[in-house]
Amino acid sequence: MDRMTASPARKVLLAAPRGYCAGVDRAVIAVEKALEQYGAPVYVRHEIVHNKYVVKTLEKKGAIFVDETEEVPEGNIVIFSAHGVAPVVHEEAARGKLATIDATCPLVTKVHKEAVRFAKEDYDILLIGHEGHEEVIGTSGEAPDHITLVDGPEDVAKVEVRDPDKVVWLSQTTLSVDETMETVDALKGRFPNLLSPPSDDICYATQNRQTAVKQMGAEADLVIVVGSKNSSNSVRLVEVALGAGARDAHLVDYAEEIDETWLEGVSTVGVTSGASVPEILVEGVLEWLAQRGFEDVETVKAAEESITFSLPKELRRDLRAEARAAVEG
Ligand code: SF4
Image (tube, rainbow, N blue to C red; front, side):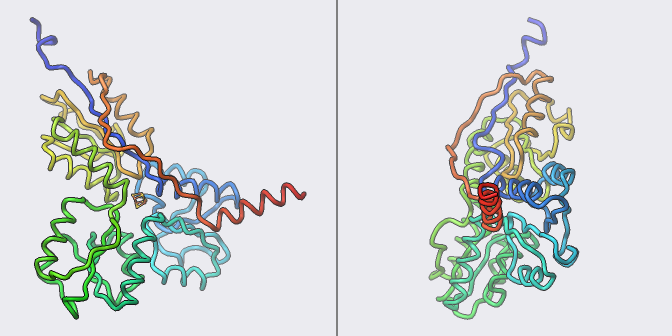
């Protein structure tokens, strides 16, 4: 037997679902439609979604990404990203006489509304999430006097509340489901009457992508997650893969970032992608792997997804008006 036939069969386990979620799809289309509708430039506050490729592609089409609303010249259009913004950002835009398109994912808006409601009822809100993440900054801004950030189980001991019997927890939408439940358990140890959110804050897309990666992680020698380093849900997929038993796992933006040495002694490679990743980048990784003998691709399906969200209301209104004018004209 020669050395080639002695080596174990090489295969790829491809997670499903992976890649674009409904909120990202809507936000990216919102920028594209705004460019078509109003012409370039269209300003976008922060990365519309956390993916380098998507941002570069939209920049080429005429989108200008800014860190702060004040950077947008008066009278222009600014789009708010899928991660959501605090009310103060809407006020800044109004002061700057900017037209706004709010591409906040409806599932993030749901958490904002929960925060507003519990703050009105005078609860102390423990928001589980990552310090400095845009979504957490936006949600906290809805009720800054009522919200305390809890960045993992290690933060629980230092949490202070006014009334331990009037406390509720909420969370960022893109966390690790298991780690969040660890934090919740630790919080319940301190506050036995801690109230839970009325429905899951960790969104369906985050949960499904983690379930799929768990299923394939145990079988994979190496898991490649396609996604950007500032994408919370993508980073979580690497952690979940390792937690599920994968020997090694890495996050890459593009196939070119894969290191050949990762393949040493590897016969099964798991591939998935974060919720802000277009499929073309996964195709690039599959092609790269196929060129190295990993041609056999098996899908590991954890869930069906059929959720879609309608475009932001400001865009729908203008697109309707344009369609009406075309009919009447
Ligand atoms: S990851 Fe979830 S919360 Fe974030 S944009 Fe996608 S669907 Fe919305």
